[in-house]
Length: 255
Length: 321
Figure 1 (cartoon, each protein chain N blue to C red):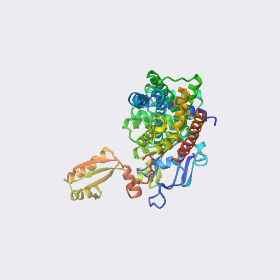
Figure 2 (figure 1 turned 180 degrees about the vertical axis):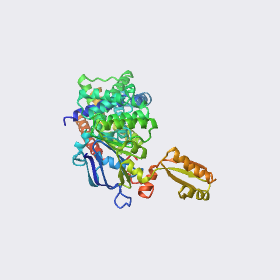
Figure 3 (figure 1 turned 60 degrees about the vertical axis):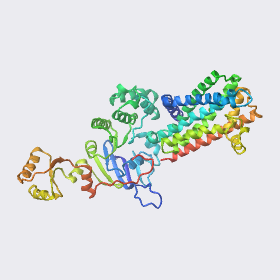
Figure 4 (figure 1 turned 45 degrees about the vertical axis):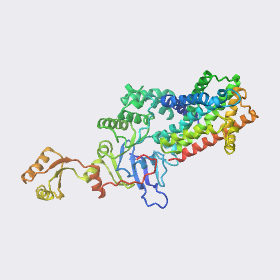
């Protein structure tokens, strides 16, 4: 127990070094969301009627898309550790070996904080005008990190379970498309009925609504901002806990 | 001297229920004397890696018992992990980290006191001739250097037992030689080494005792000299154009022909090889080809088990071959 904190911090430093030195992944994590932002604002933006400037509507969605995408790369990092002999070595040492997972998760949080800041910067250059107070900013960032947290733990679980780098890479596709079927890019009531049911009740929607409400003074006109925030936090913590435990168990079980 | 690693009746099978594939380990027994090197010698699929994984607490045996320094590898796994190090077949270092960063990380994970880590890392980098490259990312290093770093990572804590699973597979001869020197140095410092290898020469050079494994059990055990004596010496191998040519020469050198080949045991000395060749020349039949060949792993298996080591396919998915 005394060594647990030291192990986690050692593995976090390692995770941060690995992430920050993977230039390709870093560029993808920044460039892709910026392109998506440009595309939505410049290409689709004219056709969208969301009540306010579309950039104010869509920026939180793109931020979450970017965060989810960045978090998904954890699957590949964990898979690499599982198959490269690193985990074998750690298991033969007196460390709690799943700290290797926490290290990747912590690194993912920091990395996504950075990419989030960059995407925010670009959208502000393009005309995004958040009206949040310092406290609301903090809350919004906290919400985004909670979202990154559960996606990362899910990615870690996927990384433990899959048996090839390709399969680990495939996970990011799933995460990429989840925000599309939510209120991230279009208001939910424009979706066909059967899809609306899913979109309204999937975890991304309350997270989006909360972040959007905090940043842009409730631009989407959400009826119940507190309710959405509570729902978002419960979703993220619940899924985060679920996938963290599942990843830990899967890690122990895989020999 | 006392045994520091023991295995009694280890049994392990990865076969699914109802499958007929043989177990990977079948009542395997062995002992490693403290302060010495034991080489587990055998072909792919003989059960070497599975044995190492059980002894280093990564895998539970289905039956049987194993101890390291008196600690049971299943019940006291944590205590065992404090006194061993494992260097697996794959090099387990981070390519994106420098040599220093890799070792420092492992030092912290091994729970060395923080103030000790830095000095120990520098000491090992120098001892393994890696100091010059220490600040560069390991991904830019050669295979031999990465392997040495991998070994160094296992030595930060001065383990009592070091497990090395085919440490020189894939290395060039010079790197292999360098690694052998490292292992000898480790043993001089008092660490006992449990080594697996496919190379008879490696076992011969490093180990005080060799256990020959085949089909998941130890089929022969002894000093390298004992094993080689059982196999016989090196041989002058002559290959002729036809079996009848070989048959003609064989009686003259007191050997029997095996198809178009004749093998004459030799001590390898110039005088003996020359005398064999003179006798052959005197018969008037010229061989197509001849060479002096030391016994190989195949010869050892042939002599001790009556068959060439089998390649078993019983191996779990996801485990390195």
